[in-house]
Image 1 (cartoon, rainbow, N blue to C red):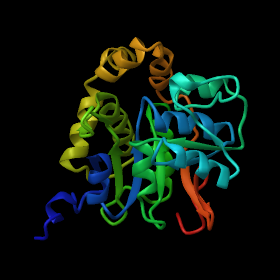
Image 2: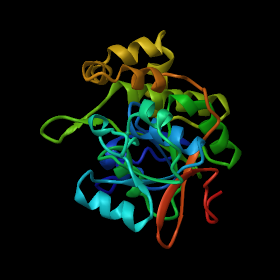
Image 3: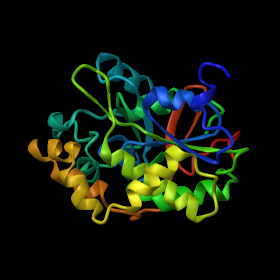
Image 4: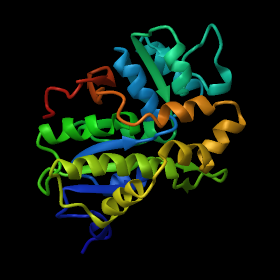
Length: 262
């Protein structure tokens, strides 16, 4: 057995892991990125409005240059939203912002997992708002079998020292998607994905849980409880943003499965 073979959850049609390293361990198959209180909920809201969303790893000076090179608007931090820069990783802000045809969303968690995927790996932005729609789209394209597995990646957050903080909201988002995949006959589920499904199905009040978990309390403390409420809107959209692209780059778009993706 190779160094990482034990981590591949092989022979399973639905697999789950945490963060960029976990995503790398599950190298083959379709990748569903789940970053509920930030990146993927924001991607779903923007993409269902027709915006082309470019993921980017870093929120620094290079992000502005990247946005300029793609003729795109740049999303700013939640606290930096202004009349001149109304787009951010805040789902509430994106709902209120003017339409942008092209938008760069920097994120050290969700974006990093998305852009690190190989060009031939289908990548989908999943969240609570599109959990059932995501499962429906993937299963309709033949994903969710041992030969064509779905890798549901909970992005997690970061502790101040930079280490991964497994985040309850992403576990529940992953679990909702896995439950919907299982309901459509996808599988078998790996033990990791079965545990995420069980956690979701055991949660009686998802909105209250999101509001009171660590990440929800953090957002509430800085005045962004509305972001938590929007992220908890279960199955309110059929929009399934998928990564597509050309020689200039890759972006999320509804229906953007790419010519080489089924």
